[in-house]
Image (cartoon, rainbow, N blue to C red; front, side, top):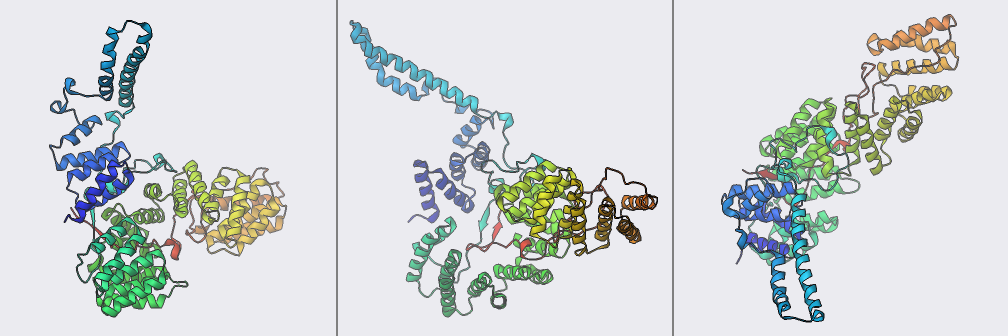
Amino acid sequence: MSTPEETMYQEVLVHIQRKENSRARDLLTRLIKINPNNPQYWLWMSAVTETVRERIFCLKEALRLDPHNEAAQRGLAMFGAIPVNPDLVVPFQHQKRRWESKLAKIEPQVEKLISIKSWRQLLPYAGAAVLVVALALVSIWGVRSILNAMPKPAQIDLGPTNTYAPTLTKAAEISLIPQGQPTPLWMLLKATYTPTPIYISTPHSSEAYTIALRAIGDGDLPKALTYIRQAIALEPKSADLYYLQGEIYRQQGNSGEALKSYNQALQLLNGFAPAYLGLARLAINSNPPKWKDAKDNLTKAIELDPNLKEAVLELVNLSLEQNDPQSALDQLNQSADQIKDSPLYYLARAQAELLLSQPEQAVEDARQANQMDITLLPAYRLLGEALMAANQPAEASKSLSVYLQFTPNDAEAWVWLGESYGAQQDEEDALKAFDKALSLDKNLFDAYLQRGRIYLERKDSDNASRDLSIAVRLNPKSFRANIDLGRAFMLQGIYGNAWKQFTTAEAYITSDAEKAEFLYLRGQSLDKLNKTDEAILDYRALLALPTASVQPDWAAFAIQRIADLLTNTPQPATLTLTPTPSVTSGSVTSTPRPSDTKWPTRTPKPGPSTRTPSPTPITLTITQTK
């Protein structure tokens, strides 16, 4: 009987013969994960990949594993990746071209032309001769066209880099909206990842069980359910099979059947820890979530099996979901010995540290998670967010760009990318990122606010007032949105509306720096409305604030205007509003900054929106083997 690996390989060959490259590629990916040292797998993978770079990489792997592999050598030579080996060149006289075989079929007919005397009889054969010549010319011309269309050797990127992520020399060079499909991240691995076996209590040799696992790996849950039921029929006393059935139901959204399956597993084996993990996940996903039941079941699972990493990480995520990052960190520290070999451990640490306003530590842990598994996309997302909080926008844009190449529908990540470009004074790419975010979600407060602020700095008052008006409607209690909308009205010369908007912002002031900005701007609106006494009061209140809260040019302006108003000196016709720091309500911290600074240091929002849920697949955590 053939092994599952051999069966899968035979399926690959069938799909390749049928030209079903996508299916063959999926199966070969799994085979390479199972046995990365088989050169035939890499050779066939080179035949079904979609880009030249991927083909070269696969051929190089095949040649590395089998240095005498002639097919790999010919392929690499064809792509210009290695010099041509003269020993592998087929002599010209032995080369057989397609058009030559067609010529051989027609040749006997051409020979008859010699004996034909009538020109009427000659016509059909003359046509055949023309056809032969045409076939030869088309074939030769087609070969030359293909060769001319192939990439030149100097332009080919030979394989993966040694960095933790795809080579990114400059964030702006990465297309904001990816064209086509990016190179799969697993192609950049120096060593492949192998899956940790599913938690089981007894071994299973039935073919139904093997097919069920394969279907789970393919994401074909209906097929997996069919075969796991057959496996249960053969081994009705195996608790782990019922647990696996419950996981399939849970993934399908069938909570009722999942609950029955977990309970059946516990009836067979009361101390079966994964069943409690399954019950906890059902409690978390219920509406509303049953936090206490989830915590109790997770605690029970960990008591029964302290090495059940998924239960520990789920308990940590439960604390993060409830905005208790300190408890999450404590739980991670208590279980570090059991789970610190998993990238999800460092990912959860980074999430907690970001919520605790520890961006430097969050960057370090998110980077560690990324280096342990470069295919873990949530690590790129969290690293980008942490780098923004640590005021490293250039690095943040690199990480976020990688993430968005593979997850282009994450609107919030596009907002962060836009903020990172804005912090680098790259307003054009920032606007593109915000536009993309709003094309995905029309209710993104941060996107409207930040895009409106770019328009504000560009003196585009119409677009600024449009975006900032929407931002105020989405979050009417935002100091930043109200104050910036007032600035847009000032640019439009609508001073009464500006005064009203500044006054509205007063109710949401949270610091002396915000109060200084409010008084500085409202004083100018009153000044423009010829409310001299009220304007002087605002300017004086501004000067009475702590010095550290008032930007020097604001104070100088207030002193000058007080003197001018007291002497009835007219206000300048053109009023220049000093740029103020960008502060996203609820997502960044307002701090006094120089007047030419437009973009702030981010700090994360509290709540579930900052949490990147750890995956809960049926096949558990992956570890890297070399």
